[in-house]
Amino acid sequence: MSKNEFPYLHGFDSTEQNRLRKQAEFTEHTVYKDINLSQVKKLIEVGSGVGAQTEILLRRFPKLEVECIDLSTNQLEAAKHSLAKCAYAKDRYKLHNMNATDMDFETASFDGAFLCWILEHVPDPGKVLSEVRRVLRPGSIIYITEVLNSSFFLEPYSPNVWKYWMAFNDYQYDMKGDPFIGAKLGNILMQQGYRDIKVTTKTWHLDNRRPGKRKEFIEFWTELLLSASEQLIKDKYVDEETVKKATEELKTVRNDPNAVFYYSFIQAKAKAF
Image (cartoon, rainbow, N blue to C red; front, side):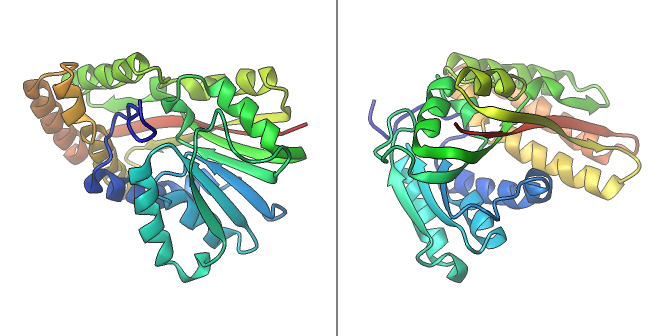
Protein backbone atom coordinates (compact mmCIF):
# COMPACT_ATOMS: atom_id res chain seq x y z
CA MET A 1 0.00 0.00 0.00
CA SER A 2 1.44 3.36 -1.01
CA LYS A 3 1.51 6.30 1.35
CA ASN A 4 -1.63 7.91 -0.02
CA GLU A 5 -3.72 4.77 -0.49
CA PHE A 6 -4.95 3.97 3.01
CA PRO A 7 -8.66 3.32 3.69
CA TYR A 8 -10.61 6.45 4.59
CA LEU A 9 -14.37 6.33 4.93
CA HIS A 10 -15.07 9.78 3.50
CA GLY A 11 -12.70 9.77 0.52
CA PHE A 12 -10.21 12.38 -0.68
CA ASP A 13 -11.99 14.39 -3.38
CA SER A 14 -12.39 18.17 -3.35
CA THR A 15 -15.93 17.95 -2.00
CA GLU A 16 -14.71 16.05 1.05
CA GLN A 17 -11.78 18.43 1.49
CA ASN A 18 -14.17 21.38 1.56
CA ARG A 19 -16.40 19.50 4.03
CA LEU A 20 -13.43 19.02 6.36
CA ARG A 21 -12.72 22.75 6.32
CA LYS A 22 -16.37 23.48 7.04
CA GLN A 23 -16.38 20.90 9.83
CA ALA A 24 -13.33 22.46 11.48
CA GLU A 25 -14.95 25.89 11.40
CA PHE A 26 -18.33 24.56 12.56
CA THR A 27 -16.93 22.67 15.56
CA GLU A 28 -14.16 25.12 16.51
CA HIS A 29 -15.80 26.66 19.57
CA THR A 30 -16.48 23.30 21.23
CA VAL A 31 -13.22 21.62 20.26
CA TYR A 32 -10.94 24.48 21.32
CA LYS A 33 -12.84 25.73 24.36
CA ASP A 34 -10.42 24.05 26.80
CA ILE A 35 -7.30 23.86 24.65
CA ASN A 36 -4.44 26.10 25.74
CA LEU A 37 -1.24 25.98 23.69
CA SER A 38 -0.08 29.47 24.58
CA GLN A 39 3.11 28.14 26.22
CA VAL A 40 3.95 25.81 23.32
CA LYS A 41 6.48 27.00 20.76
CA LYS A 42 6.89 23.98 18.50
CA LEU A 43 3.87 21.73 17.95
CA ILE A 44 3.45 18.49 16.03
CA GLU A 45 0.02 18.03 14.45
CA VAL A 46 -0.61 14.38 13.63
CA GLY A 47 -3.09 13.68 10.85
CA SER A 48 -3.23 17.31 9.72
CA GLY A 49 -5.19 16.49 6.56
CA VAL A 50 -6.21 19.52 4.53
CA GLY A 51 -4.79 21.93 7.11
CA ALA A 52 -8.19 23.00 8.43
CA GLN A 53 -7.17 22.56 12.07
CA THR A 54 -3.72 23.97 11.30
CA GLU A 55 -5.29 27.27 10.24
CA ILE A 56 -7.20 27.44 13.52
CA LEU A 57 -4.14 26.55 15.61
CA LEU A 58 -2.00 29.23 13.97
CA ARG A 59 -4.73 31.84 14.30
CA ARG A 60 -5.53 31.09 17.94
CA PHE A 61 -1.91 30.81 19.07
CA PRO A 62 0.15 33.43 17.20
CA LYS A 63 3.52 32.35 18.68
CA LEU A 64 3.08 28.74 17.60
CA GLU A 65 5.06 26.93 14.92
CA VAL A 66 3.51 23.71 13.61
CA GLU A 67 5.00 20.65 11.92
CA CYS A 68 2.15 18.83 10.17
CA ILE A 69 2.27 15.16 9.22
CA ASP A 70 -0.22 13.17 7.19
CA LEU A 71 -0.19 9.93 5.25
CA SER A 72 -2.19 11.30 2.31
CA THR A 73 -0.36 13.30 -0.35
CA ASN A 74 -3.75 14.46 -1.68
CA GLN A 75 -4.66 16.05 1.64
CA LEU A 76 -1.23 17.59 2.05
CA GLU A 77 -1.45 19.16 -1.38
CA ALA A 78 -4.81 20.66 -0.42
CA ALA A 79 -3.30 21.94 2.83
CA LYS A 80 -0.41 23.51 0.93
CA HIS A 81 -2.79 25.57 -1.22
CA SER A 82 -5.14 26.64 1.59
CA LEU A 83 -2.43 27.54 4.10
CA ALA A 84 -0.57 29.57 1.47
CA LYS A 85 -3.59 31.91 1.43
CA CYS A 86 -3.34 32.63 5.16
CA ALA A 87 -1.12 35.62 5.77
CA TYR A 88 -0.81 34.83 9.48
CA ALA A 89 0.45 31.33 8.70
CA LYS A 90 3.44 32.44 6.61
CA ASP A 91 6.71 30.71 7.64
CA ARG A 92 5.04 29.14 10.70
CA TYR A 93 4.29 25.63 9.41
CA LYS A 94 5.82 22.72 7.51
CA LEU A 95 4.02 19.83 5.81
CA HIS A 96 5.38 16.29 5.83
CA ASN A 97 4.18 13.10 4.13
CA MET A 98 4.96 10.82 7.05
CA ASN A 99 3.70 7.75 8.89
CA ALA A 100 2.75 8.63 12.47
CA THR A 101 4.04 5.27 13.73
CA ASP A 102 7.52 5.87 12.29
CA MET A 103 8.39 9.56 12.20
CA ASP A 104 11.61 11.02 10.85
CA PHE A 105 11.89 13.58 13.65
CA GLU A 106 14.59 13.40 16.31
CA THR A 107 13.68 12.35 19.83
CA ALA A 108 12.41 15.23 22.01
CA SER A 109 11.88 17.60 19.08
CA PHE A 110 8.59 19.17 20.18
CA ASP A 111 7.01 20.71 23.24
CA GLY A 112 3.39 20.03 22.25
CA ALA A 113 1.22 17.66 20.20
CA PHE A 114 -2.27 17.96 18.72
CA LEU A 115 -4.42 15.16 17.28
CA CYS A 116 -8.01 15.74 16.15
CA TRP A 117 -10.33 13.14 14.57
CA ILE A 118 -7.39 10.97 13.50
CA LEU A 119 -6.96 8.00 15.87
CA GLU A 120 -10.40 6.69 14.89
CA HIS A 121 -8.92 5.93 11.46
CA VAL A 122 -5.64 4.22 12.40
CA PRO A 123 -5.18 0.49 13.11
CA ASP A 124 -2.80 0.93 16.06
CA PRO A 125 -3.46 4.15 18.02
CA GLY A 126 -1.20 3.00 20.84
CA LYS A 127 1.74 2.81 18.48
CA VAL A 128 0.96 6.32 17.21
CA LEU A 129 0.87 7.74 20.74
CA SER A 130 4.07 5.90 21.62
CA GLU A 131 5.84 7.52 18.68
CA VAL A 132 4.36 10.92 19.54
CA ARG A 133 5.71 10.55 23.08
CA ARG A 134 9.15 9.80 21.66
CA VAL A 135 9.29 13.08 19.73
CA LEU A 136 7.94 15.14 22.65
CA ARG A 137 10.22 16.68 25.25
CA PRO A 138 9.61 15.56 28.86
CA GLY A 139 6.75 17.53 30.37
CA SER A 140 5.26 18.44 26.99
CA ILE A 141 1.49 18.62 26.59
CA ILE A 142 -0.69 16.59 24.23
CA TYR A 143 -4.32 17.22 23.27
CA ILE A 144 -6.40 14.51 21.58
CA THR A 145 -9.98 14.96 20.34
CA GLU A 146 -11.83 11.81 19.28
CA VAL A 147 -15.21 10.34 18.41
CA LEU A 148 -17.58 8.32 20.56
CA ASN A 149 -20.11 7.18 18.00
CA SER A 150 -22.20 5.14 20.45
CA SER A 151 -23.42 8.45 21.92
CA PHE A 152 -25.40 9.51 18.83
CA PHE A 153 -29.13 10.03 19.45
CA LEU A 154 -31.79 11.38 17.13
CA GLU A 155 -35.49 12.05 17.71
CA PRO A 156 -37.90 11.30 16.08
CA TYR A 157 -36.92 7.66 15.59
CA SER A 158 -35.36 7.15 12.15
CA PRO A 159 -34.79 3.44 11.38
CA ASN A 160 -32.94 3.93 8.11
CA VAL A 161 -30.61 6.51 9.69
CA TRP A 162 -29.77 3.94 12.38
CA LYS A 163 -29.26 1.22 9.77
CA TYR A 164 -26.94 3.55 7.87
CA TRP A 165 -25.14 4.60 11.08
CA MET A 166 -24.44 0.97 12.03
CA ALA A 167 -23.03 0.35 8.55
CA PHE A 168 -20.94 3.50 8.89
CA ASN A 169 -19.41 2.21 12.13
CA ASP A 170 -19.04 -1.38 10.87
CA TYR A 171 -17.09 -0.13 7.87
CA GLN A 172 -14.72 1.80 10.09
CA TYR A 173 -14.13 -1.29 12.26
CA ASP A 174 -13.54 -3.47 9.22
CA MET A 175 -10.99 -0.95 7.95
CA LYS A 176 -9.12 -1.40 11.29
CA GLY A 177 -10.36 1.89 12.71
CA ASP A 178 -12.35 2.46 15.89
CA PRO A 179 -15.52 4.60 15.96
CA PHE A 180 -15.64 4.39 19.78
CA ILE A 181 -12.01 5.17 20.55
CA GLY A 182 -12.77 8.35 22.46
CA ALA A 183 -13.85 6.40 25.55
CA LYS A 184 -10.57 4.46 25.49
CA LEU A 185 -8.16 7.41 25.38
CA GLY A 186 -7.43 7.36 29.11
CA ASN A 187 -6.39 3.70 29.00
CA ILE A 188 -4.27 4.13 25.87
CA LEU A 189 -2.46 7.18 27.24
CA MET A 190 -1.69 5.35 30.50
CA GLN A 191 -0.40 2.33 28.62
CA GLN A 192 1.97 4.53 26.63
CA GLY A 193 3.47 6.22 29.68
CA TYR A 194 1.71 9.58 29.67
CA ARG A 195 0.92 11.28 32.97
CA ASP A 196 -1.44 13.92 34.36
CA ILE A 197 -4.16 12.50 32.13
CA LYS A 198 -7.46 14.34 32.01
CA VAL A 199 -10.37 13.07 29.92
CA THR A 200 -13.40 15.29 29.26
CA THR A 201 -16.72 14.61 27.56
CA LYS A 202 -17.90 17.31 25.15
CA THR A 203 -21.56 17.25 24.17
CA TRP A 204 -23.84 18.73 21.56
CA HIS A 205 -27.42 18.47 22.86
CA LEU A 206 -29.87 20.40 20.73
CA ASP A 207 -33.62 20.53 21.29
CA ASN A 208 -36.40 23.13 21.50
CA ARG A 209 -34.22 25.37 23.64
CA ARG A 210 -32.16 26.27 20.55
CA PRO A 211 -34.19 25.42 17.43
CA GLY A 212 -32.00 27.38 15.04
CA LYS A 213 -28.79 25.75 16.24
CA ARG A 214 -30.52 22.34 16.25
CA LYS A 215 -31.44 22.67 12.58
CA GLU A 216 -27.93 23.83 11.76
CA PHE A 217 -26.40 20.80 13.50
CA ILE A 218 -28.71 18.31 11.80
CA GLU A 219 -27.80 19.81 8.43
CA PHE A 220 -24.10 19.52 9.33
CA TRP A 221 -24.54 15.94 10.52
CA THR A 222 -26.44 15.00 7.36
CA GLU A 223 -23.54 16.24 5.26
CA LEU A 224 -21.06 14.32 7.41
CA LEU A 225 -23.03 11.06 7.19
CA LEU A 226 -23.72 11.22 3.48
CA SER A 227 -20.09 11.99 2.67
CA ALA A 228 -19.50 8.25 3.25
CA SER A 229 -22.48 7.00 1.23
CA GLU A 230 -20.63 6.42 -2.03
CA GLN A 231 -17.99 4.28 -0.32
CA LEU A 232 -20.55 2.36 1.74
CA ILE A 233 -22.64 1.58 -1.34
CA LYS A 234 -19.58 0.60 -3.36
CA ASP A 235 -18.43 -1.87 -0.70
CA LYS A 236 -22.00 -3.16 -0.18
CA TYR A 237 -22.42 -2.05 3.42
CA VAL A 238 -25.68 -0.32 2.49
CA ASP A 239 -27.84 -0.12 -0.62
CA GLU A 240 -29.01 2.98 -2.44
CA GLU A 241 -32.54 2.60 -1.10
CA THR A 242 -31.33 2.79 2.49
CA VAL A 243 -29.32 5.92 1.71
CA LYS A 244 -32.35 7.49 0.03
CA LYS A 245 -34.65 6.71 2.97
CA ALA A 246 -32.06 7.83 5.52
CA THR A 247 -31.70 11.13 3.68
CA GLU A 248 -35.48 11.60 3.76
CA GLU A 249 -35.60 10.80 7.47
CA LEU A 250 -32.86 13.30 8.24
CA LYS A 251 -34.81 15.96 6.37
CA THR A 252 -37.91 15.08 8.39
CA VAL A 253 -35.99 15.33 11.66
CA ARG A 254 -34.45 18.64 10.64
CA ASN A 255 -37.93 20.14 10.16
CA ASP A 256 -39.61 18.49 13.15
CA PRO A 257 -40.63 21.08 15.78
CA ASN A 258 -39.73 18.66 18.60
CA ALA A 259 -36.54 17.14 17.19
CA VAL A 260 -33.60 16.21 19.41
CA PHE A 261 -29.97 15.89 18.35
CA TYR A 262 -27.37 14.52 20.75
CA TYR A 263 -23.73 13.57 20.26
CA SER A 264 -20.76 13.42 22.61
CA PHE A 265 -17.08 13.29 21.79
CA ILE A 266 -14.05 12.95 24.02
CA GLN A 267 -11.07 15.22 24.57
CA ALA A 268 -7.96 14.07 26.42
CA LYS A 269 -5.12 16.17 27.79
CA ALA A 270 -1.89 14.65 29.13
CA LYS A 271 1.83 15.17 29.54
CA ALA A 272 4.69 13.16 28.09
CA PHE A 273 7.53 11.98 30.32
